[in-house]
Every structure is written in C-alpha cells, then in structure tokens.
Amino acid sequence: MLKHLELLVALQDLDVMITDIDEVKQIGFKVGGKEKLKEARSQLAEKLSKPLLYNYENLRKRYKRAIIPVKDDICLGCFMRIPTSLITRGRSDQDVINCEGCGRVLYWYD
Ligand SMILES: [Zn+2]
Image (tube, rainbow, N blue to C red; front, side, top):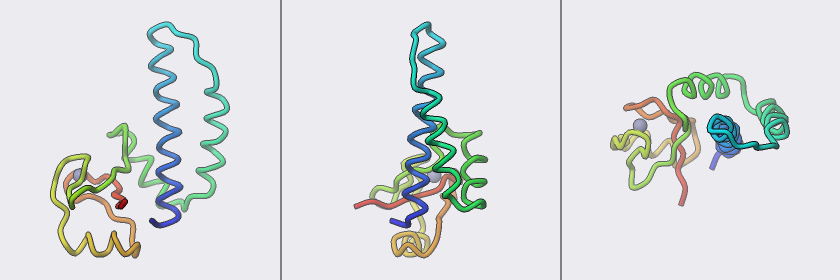
C-alpha cells in the first residue's frame, strides 16, 4: 500500500476513536485519553500531503469513514463496482483513487 495511504488509514482510526469518545461521553460515561489521541492525530496529520489531507477532511464531513477498503473490486462504502482502469491504478499504487460512486478514498489490501 502507498505510504501516505497507510498514514491516512491510521489517521482515520484516530478520528474514529476520538468520535467514539465523544459519543460515549454523551451517554454519561467518563472517558479519558482524548487529548493524547488528538496530539497523536496532529502529529500524524503533519506527515500527510496537504491535498490528501484536505480531500480526507472534506469527506469526513459526510462520512464517518472517509477511507474505505475495496473487496472483490467493490467499494465497501457504497458497494459500487470499481472500474477496471481504476483498479489497475489503485492496485499498482500509482495513485490515490476516489470511488466514483461515493467519492471516498479507496485502498486495497490482500
Ligand atoms: Zn464508494
């Protein structure tokens, strides 16, 4: 996988954890560690290229998970089949691929 996609997946994991803490707090539980997560998040964000981060931040306004795996050539965000040309580019790590259906950033794993 592309190095910056790996970073983006890690960033998303942190964002989901931060969101989860907020949700758990809303129902009245005390949870710590949010500041640490935020610190790790900003350190990670600095390593990402600006256009990719911007792309991701925009998608995050719409989706809880903005970067989504592809399984059997299908986007697991919207279940649309990915065109072969994009699969080739994505799989060979030439490019960051956005789903044509939902716009999420796609990544392949084996
Ligand atoms: Zn999609």
